[in-house]
Image (cartoon, rainbow, N blue to C red; front, side):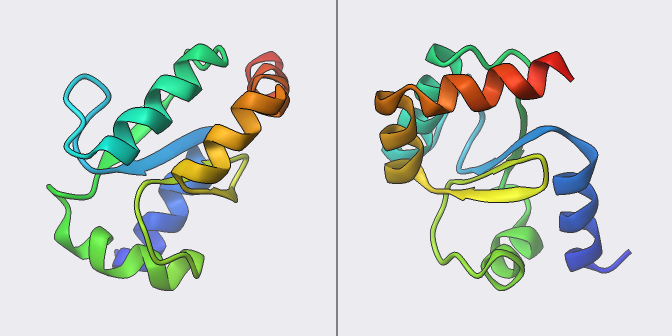
Length: 106
């Protein structure tokens, strides 16, 4: 499977997908750490993550797939939400909790 097809399968196969540096238990950058904290605080229990540091092909090609240059990258229901700053803004406004609640009801 080509890497772009694999990325698409990951994004479409899970309601919430976070491409990050490290893991939720051991994030390898502050942006990834803050994004995971915001998702958990907003109520995300079913969070599928991909460690781009262990997947160099994904790390190299995800920006091409999403048209977003940096990590982490959050996808909800197959749609790119954004990176750390956007996730934190959504969390602070309460919108992230609403989005996650809708996903987990489905």
